[in-house]
Image 1 (cartoon, rainbow, N blue to C red):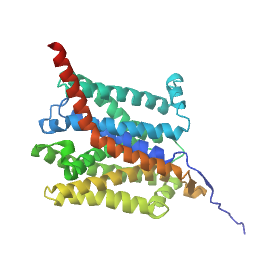
Image 2 (cartoon, rainbow, N blue to C red; image 1 turned 45 degrees about the vertical axis):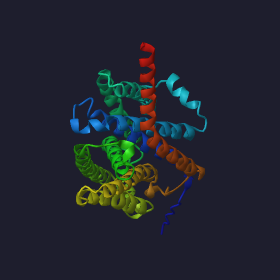
Image 3 (spheres, one colour; image 1 turned 90 degrees about the vertical axis):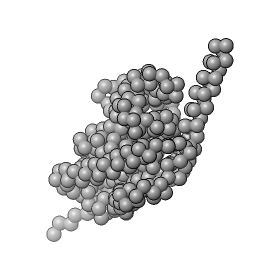
Image 4 (cartoon, rainbow, N blue to C red; image 1 turned 30 degrees about the vertical axis):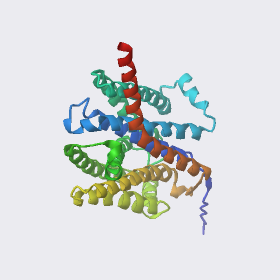
Length: 342
């Protein structure tokens, strides 16, 4: 009788927890910018009160996201080589320029938005293009890897863009529920429109995950093994309990039965943010595990999670202070110009 030996191999993950955070914050920033553009660019009056705070928070979440990416490199100056060694066939090369241009456009858009200049609409349109590109880019970065069944799907970029919008809507709900002064939303129409949009975005997110799983399941034996690893293997807890139950089903139920309660909607937002982060975690690390080849265990430096925690704290601080900070800066510039004019 022939004996077949299967060895579990432990090795380092290709992506560290810092990249999980980067993917999460990049998608969140893109989603916030898209929310900011709904009023000034697309003329949706109900969303106009969100334009300035969403834009400020798009910048606030982009900064620690970029820091996470730079820290993950180990040698931050390596990031500069992406701008000098351009490779049109590399998704990462495209992504470096998307990030750079998106950040610059976001700053220019914020400048004109706070001054209530008509140019805000023009730069908002440019920003929408790069926000969508940023939201899709992280999904494309994984989708082009043919050896990972959980990643190699055309639905993944769309899923990441959609979940970024869910995260943005959830952050607005969280702040409106517990720290309303940060947003200063006085219009009930804006709140109702946000909650209605979130329901549809979460439903779309669930459908995309379902369709993605079906495509991976029917791919081959490796695809089935990866999905079973999420459903009943090493990632079952983080996928089923954290991502699906706590991060998707429960927030959706709260939104539907809360009857407009600010605290309930705020809690729904917090749970949804946890769910979107869990989605990034499960897809990145779950996609690297190949159960049928014995590569279930991935190790990474535990200090990376400390860095993630520090950057998350920085994100919270920036989200809370950036809307007021930008407002004060723009007000200060306007006052100075008025004095000079006299």
